[in-house]
Length: 278
Length: 253
Image (cartoon, rainbow over all chains, first blue to last red; front, top):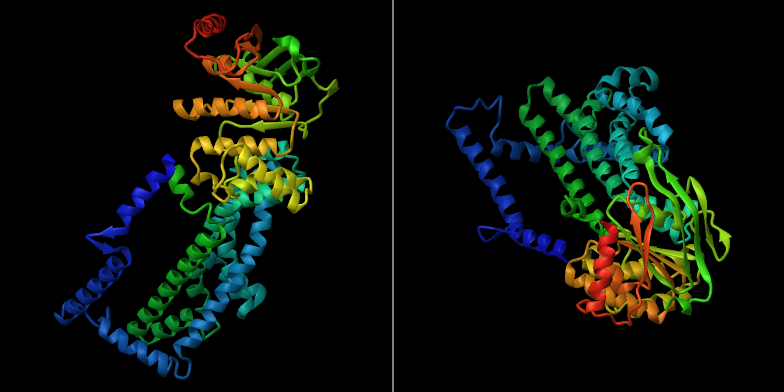
């Protein structure tokens, strides 16, 4: 009872700021910042080659949507290519990392044995593997998808391992007292107890995917938001580069909203749990 | 009062528990503990924290193995947890990802009880612990007292002969704890069970139990035994109750 009261009062406070709903505050902040940027650009203190003003970015955006850059490749084609690569790499990573994390987390020996290797491997910046990936898999889609998968893999793996290790022994003991077999202990207790942490890892991994994408699209392709930015770089078209960045940012934001929403539907019992227990 | 118990349900036979530790004095949790619990008897172990009372309960549960000695249930030596024993934990024993009713039906589902049977069983237990209307709430949406009601119902769902309770009301506020003590006695009287209860509350022990065992700390063993010969419901302020309190208090200190 005490817990839920604390939560609801906090949410009540978070809900309104100066009598405005939270989303309105967010939108107003963005609008104000953009207007300020536009205003400063007109004073002449900012070189438009370094930082084009918002109105130019919007008209460039329009061109990117209709004409495309390079001509014929509209921004929609870029977005489709990028999102598709991220999804493939991301889900490939999840499909490998979740079972692996569950196995390692359950085994004291494997956890000890793999511990340093994992820390080593996740410290290696994904981008630095680009030459190796090209040597092994060529400059095609395979290299790109695998590099995204590599980047995402470690975040999901380490979070899954931590999640399994942190399963309350009381849960396991309760399960044993209630006649759970080994497989029931795993599927009815360890797995659901680990899900919130797996989800957290998936959220972090998605961010990593969006960071890696730009780099891996810089070679061997002209489709994708990363390729768009790369092309713009050759011609000093900072307006196009910035529009590309904005798209990547917007997609990162949208997908993370979708993940939060999915979490609320799939794990209603866990939403805000970490907050409450802190 | 103990004459009403015809047979012995649980026998703890010379149990010693030595945990792995550099200092053997620290690792020795229980030393040569022997006692028994009769069928349908309510026995409580009291003692200071760290006296090995929870270790004792976990050994009877089968969650820990004794270094030496044996635990017999119905005359047979135990080998790990079994459905003849149900357990109620102090903290977070409830599965947060399951609703109250799903928590209660967790055990029956493990052993393949049919959906219809499970439902009937669950509803009966929800009524027994007076949580009608809260079936589909998640544990975190329930108060501490309600959570422990669910935990009791969940342990009862397997219809165990023995109920093991590890400071189940220790985390509750004073008033809720007293409510839960009354509730537990009511449940115990409706569905006769053998109860082995662990607490550090002397009043709680006297209020609930047929017999109170005072544990010696480090290493743990039964230092003294009290048969609480008072009619129920017991008055916590009565002179007899106070006399038991003083005697047990002296035995602990």
